[in-house]
Each structure stands twice: as structure tokens, then as C-alpha cells.
Image (cartoon, rainbow, N blue to C red; front, top):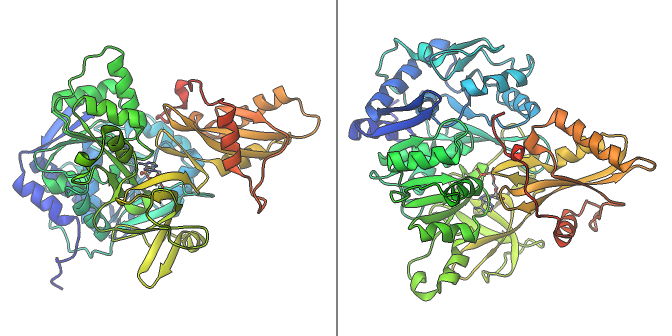
Length: 556
Ligand code: ADP
């Protein structure tokens, strides 16, 4: 069985180790900045691979991580998939119940976790849900005092051989996994095959993608539990570029310091992160951004003012759109050649604030309610359907979601994105609405349906609808509309509902506002009309107002 011709991650690791042995991987940790080279990275990845073999967890099984962005997490990125196992990155910001569901659904055999997240994981631990988990490994040299049977990472890999015969792994082998919150119900698992990660890496590395090269210094601020930090650890390695990882819950000051000290040229994150950096600089902190060439902004729409702010500092914003289902990058908005000469600066900003041009390798169509494709005129809109080598074909163990979210025709299988878009004459897509009723706050999903069900569990509530309303810092925040039952004291009700939600959900999930109404507006088919509610809320301009700090999806 010769093999070795498939599209897999192995050659990326091989190339970086051999051709860029001295290029650095830098990581902010609780104990200060740690740095080593690809040469040492390769040694440690090999040691981790041997340690994994020692656990008896066979190829094809899933291994979870519950970690921020750092070098040890990055070591799992190659060592797990390149031995034929599957790396499942778990989002530690989720409510405990979701974490339990995800671990159980994935059947993770081992979970690597950060010391700062150990308490969170111990809190979510449930014997039945975690039945498949044989071992916890804490990312550090010590195990904190928590109620989990864990070993420390350094002892786990210590003493193992620093070379490893990486096996032949087929390109259809699942290499990664991430859960998305989707529209309704439980999170849905998306598996990334070796080929999906390979093709996503090649496409995003290209100039028509994110354009990463060996002279770049790449810092993903987007968490590594968010669709592999948008694939950047793989892309950076493939390019032989320097990695910078900002560690646990980085503050604007940490991000600024790393940019300055490490000479970061490319960084990536959701708009909330960059708003934080802007405010830090506007507050009088002197930050040297001169090394920075581009900031990849995605997950939510990049505001025009943000694109201009970076322009003024000589930094290009690459506005990217993507989804967990597509590994995740789909489109990038930058000016097509020639357009810069044709358009005024204002028009250019309008273009760049769109979700942009599909990355080479993907196809899309935009379909209206009648199933007809809409013309590319920048006005007609419909749901965006997409397909390509790094777009998933199905959800993990969720046949009913497969029925809803995919559609086949003679050309192949389309993913129905749930994003409602227009396409202009130049091929730029622009999101104008979201068919899915989930709320995205600071880059993290909040399930409106789940909050509604939780609120309606209160005896004093007859109906509840939760919608996302625009917010300057978090892009969207949840607001609940509730119909009180007869004879209920409105003041007591609000306090009781908030208390009840607070017991079940993290603080950043809690609605910013509970608005009592007589009836929830309905659509023709009797569904809650969230569009009407959002508009009503906007009309009353209740939107303003600073959300308290605890609305931040952080690690506490
Ligand atoms: P991600 O890791 O990109 O946040 P998710 O699967 O969590 O992936 O979310 C995907 C959804 O987020 C998209 O379907 C879209 O609704 C929204 N989204 C992602 N990027 C953008 C963007 N640049 N502008 C507007 N919405 C976006």
C-alpha cells in the first residue's frame, strides 16, 4: 500500500520543519512569553504523537481540546490529525449543558485543557456525558487543584522519542471537528477531513485568499476553538511563517504588545477585538502598528468606520466571511484589480465592507423564495448556497439537519448558509439579513430559541421571543420580548426571569433587556416574526446604551 499522494496535513509539517527550522513560534502564557522554533515544534509534535500511541486511543478516534491560543494547543493541531486521529476543539465559553452534549456526541477519548479553564470544565463535568473520556491532560507543567483526574502535559510527552514515522492517512479521514450553534436545537458537529483542511489551507494561503507568505508574522486572535482559528495555524505552517499566539483571554494591551514586540504582519479576529484595540489607542496609549500589514476581520460584519480607521494607519482590512460548515473561509472583501482607479474612496469602502468575493475553489448561487437564482444587480436578494472542497457535506450524526441544510442538484451538493445576500455586478456578496434566528455577540453564538424556551418555562410567561439587536461593541445583543400571564406583577416577573436564566446560562447569554408586550407579532405561517420585533426595537431606538462588561464572552 504505497499511498502518500493524498491531500493531507503531513507535508505542511514536514516542509516547515525541514525548510524553516529556525522560524519561531511564540506564545503568551500565564508564565510569560515562551518561544521556540519549527525544529523544536516538530520534536514536541513527535513526542505528543508517541504519547498518544501510549494511551491506546486508536486512529479514527476523537481527541478534544478545551484551550486558548498557545503553542501546546498548536502542537495538538498537527500531532493529533497526522497520526490519523481527529482533533475536536471544544468552545469553553459555551453553557455547561452544551459542553456536556458536545463531549457526549463526539465521544472524545482524551481532553486537553488549559489550567485557567480547569474549573470551568470541572463544573461542566458529568459522569454520563463524559463517559468516553479516559484521560484529562492539563496544558502546562502542573495540574491545578480541581476535581478532575488529570496529568500535566509536560510529563505526558516527556521522555518520548523526538522523531516519529507519520503514517499514511487517507484524505477522506476526519482530521478535525468543531460544533456550530446553527439555527435551532443542539449544537451540530462539523467534521473536517484531511482534504478539507488541505484545500482550505492552500486556498487561503493564496493571494486571492488571505495571502500568507514566509515573511509574515501571523497572530490569530480568533480563538483556536473557533474553526481552528479560521485555519490560520495550518496556513501559517504551510507558508513557513512565524506564529504568534496571544494566550488566555488577551486584553487590548496584550495584543498591542505582541504586535509591537513580535513584529506581527497579519492578525485576525472578530470586530469586537479590534474595537477594544481602537479604544485602547484612543485612550492615549501609544501603540506602534507599523509592522502590521493586514487585519483579517470576520465572524460578524466589519464596520466601515473600522476599515477606515485601519486605512488611516496604513493597515489593510481583509474583511472575511465564513462559516463553521466551511472550514471556515468563504469570501474575502478586497478591491478587484482596476476597481481602485474606478471608484471614489467612499465607493471603495462600500465595496470593502461587503462580505466580498468567493475564494477560488468555491461556487455559489443566491436563491429567492421561489427557488430561482437572483440576478447579480446588488439589489435582489436571496439565500446564499455554496459548495466546494472545504464545505462540509453533512452534519455529524444529525440526519434531520442534513435534510434541512443541504440541497443536491446535478452539479453536486449545496450548503444552504442561512445568510440572505445580494450580489453586485462585480460579484461581491453582501449579507442583508440572516434567515437563522441565532444571535452573534462578540463572535459567539447565543441561541434565541433556547433562551425563549427557558423563559417560557416560567409560569408567569405565556410567550417569549428573543431577538438580536445591533450593538456597537458586541455587534449583536439579545433582547427578550415577553407576554406576561394575566395577573402577574411585571416588576417581579422581570427579576424572577433574569434570576432563573442566570442560574442556567453564562452572564453574557442574558438578555440586555426584557420588554413586556401584549402579543408577539406573527408571520403568515404563525411563526414569531423576529424581523418585526427587531424593527420595532430599532424604531424605538432603545438600542443605545452600554452593555455591562460582564456581557463579554470571557472565561469566567
Ligand atoms: P465563524 O467562525 O466565521 O464565526 P460561524 O459558523 O460561527 O463561523 O458563523 C457563521 C455565520 O456568521 C455566517 O453564516 C454569518 O451569518 C456570520 N458571519 C461570519 N462572517 C461574517 C461577516 N464578515 N459579516 C457578516 N456576518 C458574518
